[in-house]
Length: 188
Ligand code: ADP
Ligand code: ZN
Image (cartoon, rainbow, N blue to C red; front, side, top):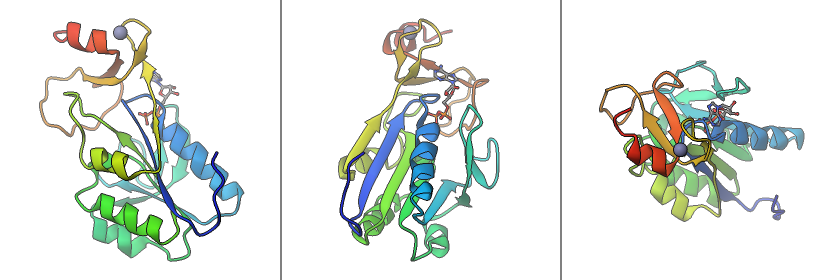
């Protein structure tokens, strides 16, 4: 990827719908940082306990140890000043203040890599993601495969009949759909 001088921080965002490989990509980048012997810390919102309390896990079961936090204050408490790379998964679930902590860390020379949904199941911008996308130096927008037609999918379609914005789940509750299948098959 891009080579930058040491001690210069920046923010990377990995976004896309569910099943697009955001966690896989986050894990890949963070693993590479550990191979380079950089001090890495990984956080995830406590709300996301789908697979494991103490790790980030992708839908294909790759995982890395992480710290679950339920507030920004908690994240500050766990942050080690020697950390060079900070990873956050499911960043859209973190409360207000996420943008600020990412900016502060990057300004201090950290590489900040965050992954999360850019839109919710209603296709509306999710949490602080819109601002994160605008402040990030590097943005990667991934796509999944539409389970209805096989085209690239950018939408997370909710199968269950619940209408809260936050409903943590996987294949039983959501499916990846392309624009056409998302809007034309709303009743399925
Ligand atoms: P995300 O963090 O974006 O939800 P993950 O990294 O957790 O994605 O999982 C990506 C993996 O999900 C893929 O490698 C694949 O094994 C699996 N997967 C399940 N359904 C789909 C789909 N419709 N399109 C692409 N990958 C899928
Ligand atoms: Zn489709």
